[in-house]
Structures are given as structure tokens and as C-alpha cells.
Length: 273
Image (cartoon, rainbow, N blue to C red):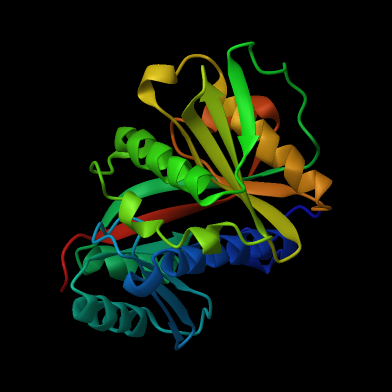
């Protein structure tokens, strides 16, 4: 796997670019999973996605793919599109690539809510098997996708999402069961308590929506489901697996063998401009 050498433009590295495009594909999926309530708009070098949830953090957002698109154009386009949808949005920027855009966004009043590493794993991960009272299930039915959505909604409240914010964005269960997507559920005494998702695209595999219900934490279930989808990515032929680490998950991922590739931040406009 190539290592970035141009720190001024990390996305010039092909592996970093693949991670970025995999993340953008996940964002498109967020719009698709919302069914009639979602939307994806691509223009002027931007990708914007809206979901059936009005929560502005990550569920409604914009990414600049063309570095030549000026920051004022990015912000004006996003303000206009999300204004018509009646929501705020998150602007996702990469350190060393989008510094001009981040500076303009902060000057325009967007608030930095997340600043985290994009991490990658170069080889399958070893670990202990599940405990006797834990069962792993790969989602194949609408009911299992609904259980996944419920676990994500409840687990992500620890990261600041209001109760019920995520659930409306995962309603088109048939879209979540497409072959480039995989979900693993960890069941504790038969009840879903942890989950992780894999998205295969752009020559790699990305890990998303890792979560464990608060009452089931401390048992290593987050690491367990992350390991399962990481290894599934390698089984599917990915040369590496990537994820965006939350502060809660970052030390776990480092212990598993994930390493930093670049940093990215989310700047939020909480209400329509």
C-alpha cells in the first residue's frame, strides 16, 4: 500500500483518494436509504446529500471533490440547496486539501464539530471468538436491517445524535441489502446490541456505522464487529480497509492495527442560512 508523501495535498495519493471516494459513496447511500425523503445532488464539483432526517450532522452534508471550486461557490451552493430542503448541513473537509474551504466556512459561521483521522488497515485482524452468549449475524432480511438501524440510532446518541435522528434515514431496506454492502449484528442473548457496516467501492472496503448499545459496552463488542467487517473486506478482495474514527473508537482501531492516512473535519451549519 502506498504511503502519502505530499503532505500538502494528501488526496493526491491514490489510496487516500480511494478512501475519500468510498466515503462519498457512503454519503450517496445515505440519501438513497431515505427513499422518497432523500436526495443526492452533484454539480460544480460538489456532492450534496440529504436524508429524511433533518439532523444536520453528517446525515445532510456536502463534499468538494474538485479543488478548483472556490469556497464561496461551495458555501453558496450548499446554503441554497439545503435551504430549499429546510435543513442545516455538514461540510466535510480534508486537512491539507481543503484548508481554504475550512477557513472560509469558519469565517461564515460553521462550527467545527468533528476532527478525526481517516484510518486504514493493511491486513486481516486476529482476535478472540465471540463469548458464548454472543452470536454474530450477517443481515439478509428487512427485519435485520431494521434492527441495525435501531442499534445505530440508539448507539450514536453517545456521540451527540438526538434520539430518533438516524432512524428515519434508513428506511429503504432493499437498498441497504445491495451486494456492495454488508452488515454484521452482534446479538447478546438473542438481542441485537452492536453492529458494523461494510461498503465495497473504488477498489477498497470502508467500515461505517460501528455502534454498541450503552448497556452492552465493556464487552469488546465494538471491536468484535469491526474485526468481522474488516476481515470480510479482505475476503472480498480489498487490498486495504478504511474507516473514519470517532474519539470513542480511535484507540480501539489503533490497537487492532489501523493507522492514520489523513485527517478530516466536519463543520456544521445547524440551521438553514
